[in-house]
Amino acid sequence: MVFAAGFFGVGLFGSSYTEGTKYPYILTTIRPLDYAVWGPAFMLALALVVLVSCIHSQAPEDKKVFSQVALSFVVIYAAMTTTDFFIQWTVILPSIINNETAGLALFSIYNPRGIPIAIESLGYLVLNTALLFLVPVIGGRSRLERAVRWLFVIGFVLVVGSFGALTLAGFPIVVFEVVAVTIDVAILIVSGVLLGLRFKRAVTGLPNCSPGDNPSNRT
Image 1 (tube, rainbow, N blue to C red):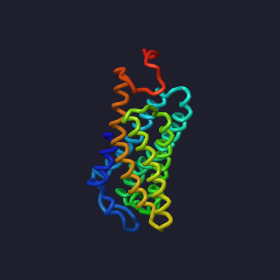
Image 2: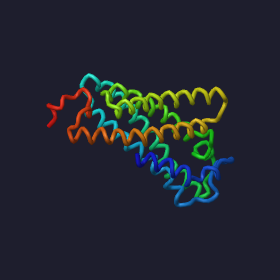
Image 3: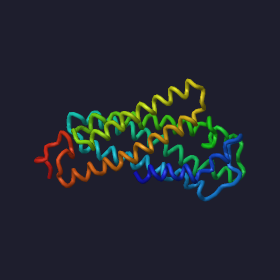
Image 4: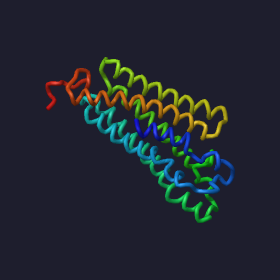
């Protein structure tokens, strides 16, 4: 929840994206914040691997195939996005500082049709697929669990639907990336709170905390 909110806040108020959106899609000056701008998104990807691993560990045996698939997709998402951001930190920004900008246009995250934006966008499609596979895992009839399931289903429909609609309308991939980030950040903030409450109930032994789990089997 914290990393999702930080990702949105830093991207909205701390990014130099508008400065670098003209060819050759590089910044004229590098600020310390330009190195930190992708930090929350980087940590969010790693935190989601931990979160889905925790959900997988608590999943009932007959639902573990779904949580295993979800975990696999989240690992793919994390590998794609963290590599994307790490290349910006260690290759693109140092190259700009040293005036070695030849051939950087396609690899700059400030290029609205660049490779990094395409990789990140694919990552969000993979992430929402992972969240969709968690829907059957998060069983139970409590309002909390129903809300999480609906959030993941709606998020998948909105992200995949917006990708198809924006692509057919001829918009550059960066438009979908912005839409996907906005949708996913909202979903991850709300579901982060709800899943935190769910795990807290599991620890304290309250009912409806671990669907399919027999409380008498807990140690």
